[in-house]
Each structure stands twice: as structure tokens, then as C-alpha cells.
Length: 139
Image 1 (cartoon, rainbow, N blue to C red):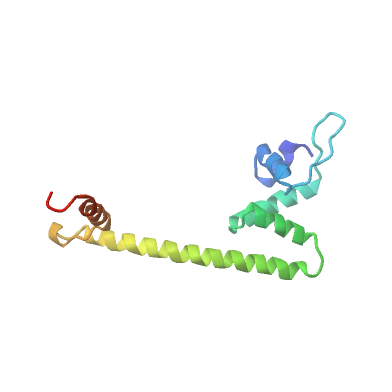
Image 2 (cartoon, one colour; image 1 turned 180 degrees about the horizontal axis):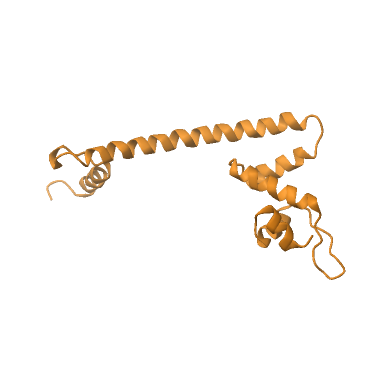
């Protein structure tokens, strides 16, 4: 298969294939006598694996490790599980942080409907606090 066909089957653009080759995620294919890259079906499976892993939040470095593990033996499953558990912990931390940010925004937005004297706008309060810290006393 040529580059364009692999890219189409895997749902990526040809530059992505070349990038994956440079990163070592996708083996460099042999060249046909015409000079074109000649991929086999494995290339499509590898690229789809990479894209699915990215959707799960894995970095390309982690995906490289997972690809190596996928080619390994019986211990590969336990090692892959350890990588996935670490990714899950990272995602849990991000989710916790995002929920806290969302909750802060919800509280801030809820105050917008109140009369001006009863509003609590953290952004405006932070700006005001910063101004108070930069203005010298008695000035």
C-alpha cells in the first residue's frame, strides 16, 4: 500500500505517517522500485492503535512503550497494566482539578444574578486585591 492509502484506511493524513516513522512508532517501510513507500496491513493496525491510545490520553512516549509491550511475551500484559494505571491516576488528578475549576465558575456565575452589592466575583476581587497590594499606603 502507498502512503495515501494507509493514511486513508487509518483515518490520518500522510504527514502523520511520516511523523510516526520519525518517532519510531511505525517501522520505516521498504520502498518499491518506483521509490514509493510500500506499507503492509500492519501499518494500518499500528496507526489505529496509536490513535486509539491517544484518545485514551496516552502520550506518544507511553504509546511507544505500549507498542513494545504489544510485541512482547507473557509479562507484557502486567507492564501494560502498570502504564494504564499510571495514566488513570493522571486522568483522575486532571478530572479532580477540572471539577474544582467548574465548581468555582458555577459559584461565580450564580452570583451574577444577585444585586450588585451581593455579588461575589472572584476575578474582580483578585484584580482589586492585586491593586491594593501595589498601591502604597497613604497614597
